[in-house]
Image (cartoon, rainbow, N blue to C red):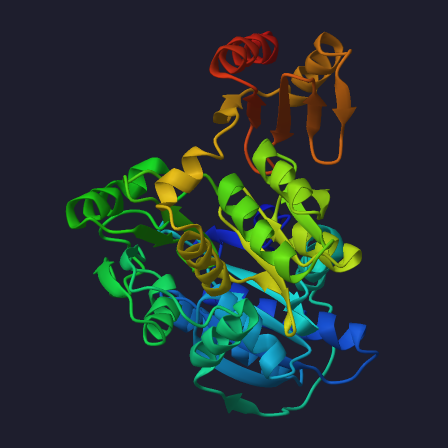
Amino acid sequence: MTIPRHIFRTYDIRGLVDTEITPEFAYHLGRAFATFIRRELGGKAPTIAVGYDMRPSSIPYEAEVVKGLVAQGARVIRMGLLSTPGFYFGVSHVDADGGIQISASHNPAAYNGFKVVRARSVAISGETGIQTIADIMEKEDFEGEGVNGVEVVEGIADKQVAAEIEFSQVKDLPKFKLVADSANAMGAQYLDVLFKHYAFEVTRLYWDFDGTFPNHEADPHKPENNQAISKAVLELGADVGIATDGDGDRIFFIDDTGRVVEPAIISGLVARAMLRRFPGATIGYDIRPGKITEDMIREGGGVPMVTRVGHALIKEAMIKAGAVFSGELTGHFYMSMPSGVYEAPVATMLLILAEVARSGKKLSEIAAGLRKYSYSGEMNFKLEDKSGALSRLKQHFADGQHSELDGLSITYPDFWFNVRCSNTEPLLRLNLEAIDDETMQARLSEAAKIINIE
């Protein structure tokens, strides 16, 4: 069959509803995935867990995926409406050989997609199977027959939250005043369960599931999507604001002044807490600037591990290195839990609130003391000759320390930056950090000038 190969990406499968992704596509994806896992199991019929998010197209796509799985002889466990972290937990909880989550994460309503995992929710990336699944679909090279049955399992979200609470070991917390914004998306599911366990005073924003996102995009990485929660935190005198994304695998924290706390600082705070529990452990952080995380890992006696960008790649690196925690600048926070390595927003939230309680300070005061460096934010440059720009940067900054782990990273004593090519657009993404604002602005202008010469 003809498929849009470009939607099979590095981390997942994601495309436009009704054009790039159709019910027929979902059906054949189910057939291909069952074939893929069956082959990895040496011909054994696989057990596949399936979940979906609140997008209008997710329900019909889930039904077609299940039909496709069954057509190839898979035993299917339908876990229902779930956040992505709930799905990851569920795959391990039901002891499945693999799983498919129907979701387009934080993308706008016109999109949907699929996250695919092996047993214990080991992510399947573009390098470890997504392209093979695409090949099977394209060639219609399906294997397996017969029907092993369909089972419905309920209550996964409750079990997920209980498992994350147990893992965090945070039992008692003050009666924090919180504002939570789920953007009408899946974070509301696990936050509602969590709030039953603690005596928080909670104000909920945009809480009803609505995959058309009527209030704002479900992407708290974009500042414009946090205006309502920042305003509410200030007006209500809240201690902390919590914002989650479309499928609930990313979580952002807003301090008592209404300011978003940089994920690099959140990663450092969680690392500090984890290292008290796991002395000397390996802690990951992604390659983009956010040096405070590395500093805090070292200060806590941990072993810093720099990773490539992207959930599938980070999880692979964590498993290989035996890392207990890893943070990403996009608000993903990964834990190595008994059920697997994946995002754990509930445990992350509890550890941050515990750090606030432990310190006796406001979150804004904690964060202010950790803003040692000046960060540019991510700058996107639209150009066709991305490789040419990278070559110019290498030559211009030849006397710096170079790394090509993920894109190009160049480090000097007073500034450092990473440049990565977009996988899907003619964009070069620059993140630069420095010891002070003056150095950051000067070096940012310098790097931008080199990139823009064509």
